[in-house]
Image (cartoon, rainbow, N blue to C red; front, side, top):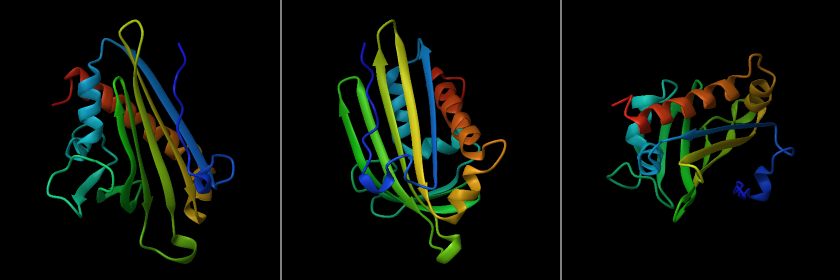
Amino acid sequence: MKQNAIIWPSKYTPGFTDNFCSNEIIVRGVDLERVVDGLCDAANWTKYYQNCADVKMHNQDDTRLKMGTRFEFKTFGFLVQGEVMECSRDGDVLRLAWKGWNDATGDEYLEVYHAWLVERLDGDRVRILTQESQLGTPAVALANSRPNTMINGHQDWLIGLVGFAKGDIA
């Protein structure tokens, strides 16, 4: 079975940015709809991901992510502004991506493209892939961190999302 891939805007092409991380998990017996709900409703993030706080929406009253949603949240020590750039569901495949940035300037400025791919696989399996490409001096520091801050943080996000989808986390 062919698996899908992230679609990258050219500015954020991995290998040409200051940092790139990729995390993936494939699990059996998880409800795809619960995974999608856990990810697409930003109000759920703080329930299962400890590196996320203070989620606020800017241009809508509900917390469900969709094309053009503007939001902010705290993560990895940054207050990140975000805008959903891709949000589509084609049957058993969800694509979600946002551009994120902080309000700093100069060497403190950080810009990211965080993409997600959730898909049903054969054998009652669900694949969750998250990748992030980053620009800016803070991205260079994150790329050089050992253990890798982004890889470990995003793996925690995946594990928490699966726990949420299984009902282990309310």
